[in-house]
Length: 605
Image (cartoon, rainbow, N blue to C red; front, top):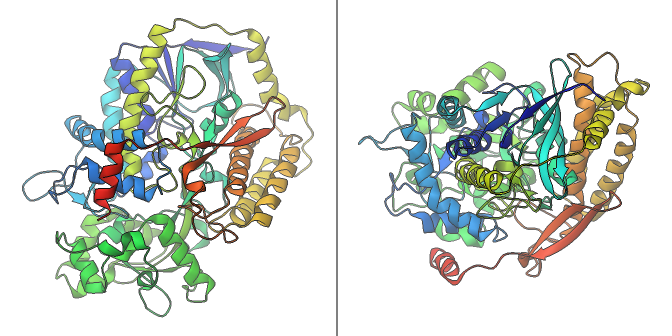
């Protein structure tokens, strides 16, 4: 029998970002005993890196905004593959969640009359993003932690969950280990909320921090849950490209929201060259119109730099491939040009974008108030994830809920900037509420010791293998490089098939990886265990991308250009087969209610 510590809770929340904290707060407020597990330190969640703001139709800057317009924008951005119920709930409830956060102590930027200030963002018809300069995610985490500390939530920091424990079909707990000492922990519970974030560390160039290894996706998949829409991986158009040590670090869309423009090496604003028909009616025709819009003129139209992220990323890639890129393989993002229009432009930039100013000053030696930045696409966000019920957020496994980036449905084929932070609040609350109700209504669980012993043996196996010098880091680096090359922004069948083969080979290598030393402070062991998750999500992305034979949203196939109407009503499901292999199937997208269809039609005019 392995040595392990047993901890009991009614509800276990895995992940302490915005979704996890909001779920834990709501479950605790519902009377449940709550445990919160985080892979890193509390407060280090990747949510703190969210910069631009949270989307909610508060209508503080433009009084024409309302939930129906936000809903229509979200569906349009997602190419109508979204779960319409989730898009509806999100648009309706986001304003209350933002006001609630304000009531709990969040400090937002303000309009002259004292209301929460909102800024423009890509794909949103009106200024909609409530923000705190360019550090909104940090303020969200600070506020949720300060509020949650009074709820009696038990926090288990620097703990990695390796496997979910089941009692029949339903979840009964989780098996993990303390990252410092390597000691095992068993969490027994009646419901679990998965809030582990994304999969960015499966790619070489990413804005994601080290924790984003697809843990929640793979834990749910191994437990029998369905994964949905995994082909849709968002490549944020603006990440740093120079120097190499900081490549991929996010450059917030807020730079473009505050007037920043994209130029190629010829100095031309290339985004005017390719404007989708859906957006031509609301896109500026020239620089003057674009700038008037960013200043809040209600009658002006949006600049093309604020089209959806997938489109902007592909336009940047086109300029680079056709030889019009910047010296280091990106393009130029210029906000310094506003000094010709605004008297106190440098002070305004430093006030509105303090983090970006210091980021480029410290990391690249560039003063963004006087010179352009070099930017290029970076792996940023996974629209796909665990398939959940739109109202309750419960997965296909009873008692297993999911919220935030690891849950699929809200964003469809492409997420609009700012929708992620309000997503965390809206569906974090719903997941916590319904998990607490499930735990109360369905009684206690039990699980046989065999599952725990099996998980412990698997976790310790790398110590029993011979370290041949390759090690887990080499496997991970190869996976990241090949995923970037073969399953990146632009895809084609032969490369996707090659990717599936490469992933299979790397899985074989990962199963033979050995590590040295002991369980205390052993990053090699941690990486060896993470490989299992990275390989699952990488295979899911590659197989789903291979299956969807069209280009839609963040999924671009150069061998199937354009949208196929048949695929416009299908979603791809991946689940673990009885033989352990990954099964791929399709299901019809959820139908729109008549009233929601009418809202979309009215907002296309």
